[in-house]
Image (tube, rainbow, N blue to C red):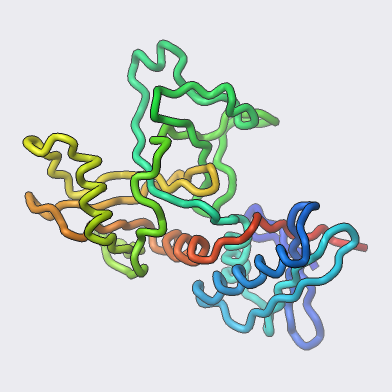
Length: 270
């Protein structure tokens, strides 16, 4: 049975006992050990997102090993969407990075991103880099059509401002009346980020928050993450990172349990 969830095509097997199975595979070079590592990580991600009754099993495939994710009951559409998002990110590297827009002179001089498939043609000032972007569901964010198209891009610092390893335990708070996912940064990281964004101690930028981009595995999410560094004119000892709630839950689950590679759904066999 094929069930379509947004842009994600799931090949799902439903048995008479109402079990449901989703089959994944990795790259051609993937070994059983690799798929087993993916199974462990994906199950941890699912548990962190509140999915229950999931087990994983690695089998021999026609060309490469196959990972079966088995649910003890039929998964509702919302749960299938979560599984889709959790499986399409390896999550081996993640950080917040600062960015900026191009100046008129840079636009005139041709500073800009190259086509999606030709990053060697990117032009960026020293210390900055163009990152192609993904949507909040981790699918490609792009404009135009055809191979090599120019996708949604952002010019960001090459060096991370805040590595994900510095994020504290995820929580929930309200920002502008909306529920958000929240992480509390340790004092040393909070001060380092404050100093990075306020190089002149005599004239600090007393902004309550900074927009930063979440970069992972060489791409960036289109959604900004806020870093709150001040409360009024007082610098917070422990800065706060916030983002939309559902995205934050995905981010926290994925990047605390990295996989060796992205998983793809196995094509339906006749």
